[in-house]
Image 1 (cartoon, rainbow, N blue to C red):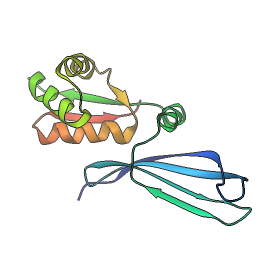
Image 2: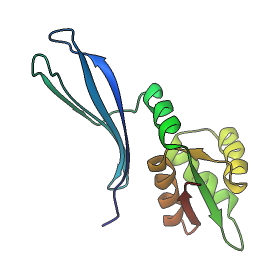
Image 3: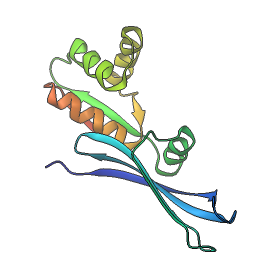
Length: 139
């Protein structure tokens, strides 16, 4: 079983029941080979509790996570970095077209592909499954 990789952020939102500001905790996690976004919140005024599991991570929270934790970087190495195999993984995992995959390949090979730690770890593991030496790191 692979290790779970996760990062969390806290933010405020408005309670849907009483209108009071509540503190939310969002977590992006890599679990069983899949990225997931979960949110938990409890209102201190009315006691309303909320848990939302799954779904896409909102761009605003992703930006917050990158700002608070810093970006992770995807590294590939080896005697022969297999461009076609890397592009295949990128297209499959990110749902991008060939032109975008070629542009991203250049960033991956040159160490310029960054994102949240769970995102980069997800890509690193998928690349490893394709026989490519890859790792997600944070400076």
